[in-house]
Length: 268
Image 1 (cartoon, rainbow, N blue to C red):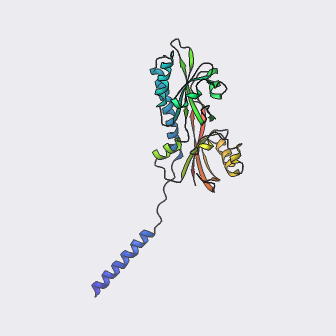
Image 2: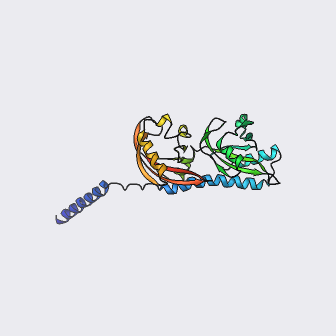
Image 3: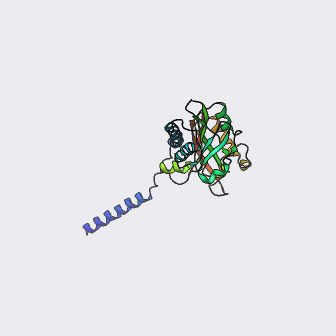
C-alpha cells in the first residue's frame, strides 16, 4: 500500500511539473536588427554598382557601335534580380538603346530633363537617383555610370533602373525575418524610394494626399529625417488592407554615391 501511495504521489508531482512547464509563456522572438538589414540592403545595391563597373571595364572602352553597346546592356541587365532595364544614354541625354526588348518602344526619348541625367551630363560620375517615373511607365530608382571612349572622352552613360519593391522581401527572406515585419526606405526629404507596396514608391510622406490623414506617420517621418538612427510609433494601413493599425518602427541609414536612405523596419 505504501508503494502504491508513493507511486501515486510521484505521478501527481510529475503531472504538476509537466503542466507548469507547458503553461510557461513561449520566449519572444528577438527583434530583427535593423542595422544588419540595412547593411544587407546596401550590399545588394553595391553589388549592382560593382557589376556595372566590372562590365564597363571589361568592355575596354568599345562603345563605337550599336552592337557593342547592346552587348554591354545585355550583360549589365543580369547584374541583379531587381534590375528592370539596362539603358545607354548618350551625351545629349537621349535614351538611345534599351534592354530588354519589350521596353524598346522608349528608345529615342529625350530624358535630358531628368535630375540624374542632368547630374551625369554636368559632371560625369557614378550616380544614384532619387525615385522617379521612368519613361517606360514605372516608378523606379536608377544607378548610372559614365562611359568613356578609347581617348577617354565622355561617351554617355550606362543606366540601370531598379524595382525597389522587390528589395525588401529579398532582405527579409535572406535574414529569416519572421512574418509581421515590413521594410521600407525614404530619403531625408520624405521621398519613399523602397517599399513592398509599389504604389508608394516615388510618393512623399509630407506632401502626397495618400498620407494626408496620417499625422502620426508624418510626425515619425520628421524624426526619421532628423536622425540617422532611432525608433518610434505610428498608425497606417496594414499591408494589403485599408484597415489602420498601430506600428512600431526602428531605422538606420545607408549611403550610396552620396544619397542617403533611411531604412525603416516596422512591426505591426
